[in-house]
Length: 319
Image (cartoon, rainbow, N blue to C red; front, side, top):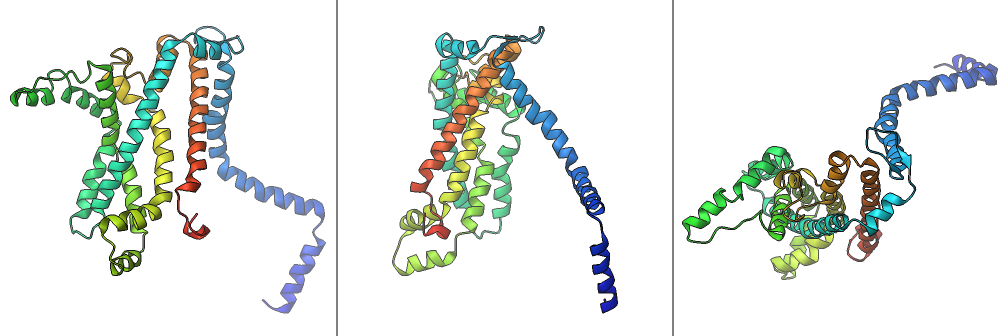
């Protein structure tokens, strides 16, 4: 570009009036808004407005067939003072979360350590171990799980063959809940892949230096692997905790939508569904949803607050 053209462009910019410059900016912004408008419309229609509607309905008596009527905090008061099934569902869910999430993460880490090798068939093994997570939450797998551990399922048949009395896996409230927990542990694929990616990011030079110093495998695991993997453990813990609170399909299928036996599998989300779509108590269900949001938020905040004591960040001097 020669000097004359540059001078002409500069002169053109100088001669642009403020009104024309504002119009050009608006035109450029409109182009951007047009591209992001599908997301904005979808977010408002399917996320933001339903959230506000749910908050409003939580303060109303609404049964889907009549207009909601404002009742203030009655839903929340009833939830905490006059609904023993609510407290039962909360207790079952906390056991499910506190029992299932650590087991799932430990199992996922164990499998990730096993797959973090240079074997030729490791790619096949990774795919096979991830396969249950692709179908683990489906209705079909929950039905299969119920049939396998049913009164006449293959597990009890094998026990009979071995001369061991059969077990009513889903006839006892405690055993039924642990069946749900084991089913959640079986769906470890996504956590395993994230752990595996974290293991790949640990420099091999750390292990080589530790070997020179005479460290054994256990010392390397606790002194190198776990500290270097702690940010990944934090991420997986938060995500799996949130996912565990939202678990619905296995409890619905295994208990046939009742939460039985004796409310032993009455997870929070299942009881919320029962209140909303069986009792048509949408106002109460909305209040339950908001309380669950608050509980998950508090647990997440606790995890992040305590993370400064056990999560290792190299960029921050080890913390």
